[in-house]
Length: 155
Length: 142
Image 1 (tube, one colour):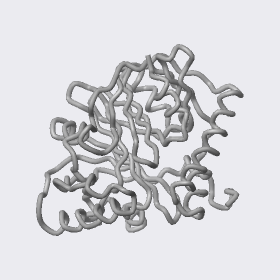
Image 2 (cartoon, chains in turn cyan, orange; image 1 turned 60 degrees about the vertical axis):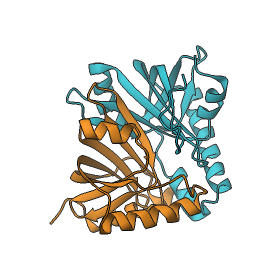
Image 3 (cartoon, chains in turn green, yellow; image 1 turned 45 degrees about the horizontal axis):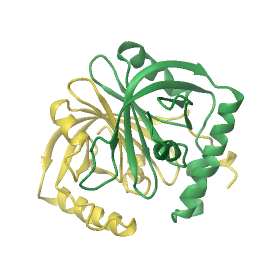
């Protein structure tokens, strides 16, 4: 079960990345363009750009191993590890979540002192569409905030 | 001529944090956010070893890694395919990284927390500019 605190954290604004690996243990990475903790509080659906998804989904069909990192400009961050469940096209509701995510992310970058001429093109310049929803079941959560406790398993 | 073109250098100035992906020998992937990927030469980059975290552990048992970096001038993103080579705890690369890390720490309220233990040197196997994940700058309402 993903804690209420972590649900709030993931729903952002945070920057997010997803990792998988192939059969030769070569890692693959992509940024995540919005994510949703599902109502079961055990699975998360990450919205990933279609052009990035092909390799990711190939890896997930092969071995199912997936990891997601979520970080706030304050440096608070977590790593969630788990197993692939399914993928699906985005619905209108998902696209709305992406739009909210993008607006909130820009707001927090500005709040943390990123210059507007850097934050705006950085956040608003990412393509979010076409995208795929990749759902995985969270099995472990690790603290990743820089410091002595980094790497500690918290769930 | 090396793998890294000159146009990639601004993406390694520590302005926009990077993502680094690795995988353990038992097949568990890991992704972390890093304050900077350092340009060493046209075939090598360095990542900071500050804490004995999963990235550090993974590359010592499986040297393959990937990094995603963003140029703060053009906002182009790049994928780097890396292979861990060795660590340096002194010398010019370590000294420069240590100084830059201190600068980043002081600007982000992390003084005393960010501390360089080693400069991990990686060989760059490929560097690919992503042409499909960014909108043209002219299309962004800034």
